[in-house]
Image (tube, rainbow, N blue to C red; front, side, top):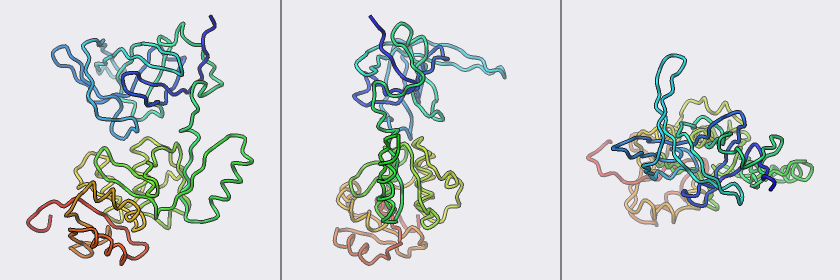
Length: 330
């Protein structure tokens, strides 16, 4: 019976991790397979670990345990010893199920969170390195987000799609409809019109980001945290100008920040019901550029919430935060 063919990049399903499809690199030069894991520890013969890590779109924070695992010790060229653990996982590539040992590794700096090596693929598949997504549609890698306030941009990209040899899905969004959900390692940035995460795009391009330095910088920090590509790499080197980029930077690096939703008034109105349900009353609303109590409001009902945003200037960015009782300036 002929072996099925796979490409260099495929989407795989980890059978015990739900129905989610995860991007994997097939490496015929690597002997073993590995998967991104965090919080790895061993106690009384039981291995504890979390698949993926904070920032990954696949991260759930759920701790997994296993009594069946392997331990190896690896020495670096500098003589440092490192303990590595392997666990047995079952995966699906298309309709094909296979089991194999995966090294739990820090793959936070790798493009793909899973690597499939020769020992797993042997006698199971033939690899055609000239192909990608033989058993998956590669939908993530075909999604590009362009952030632009110009009404001509969408029409231009439609014309690009018509003449392009590669089918790419281009979406256009402006900063007025972007909402920053600052929530520690579960922080997200969403399209306020439909609630979809911007981490769903493989590549983001910010057109004329000099007009929107603060949301552009905070978005760059978020995309780096989510291991997503951004065309405008200069945005990774910024000077914070307000609470927006400050809070995003702190949150994704594990420092405590009050739960906050930040954006222009359009986004805060679009997602008002969700924000209020999440935070509850009372809550705090403040202009991200203000200080010493100016433009800082204690809100106890929806009427005041909408009234403040209605009176806000068009280019003002506001943060809506959980209320933390305190005895003064905190």
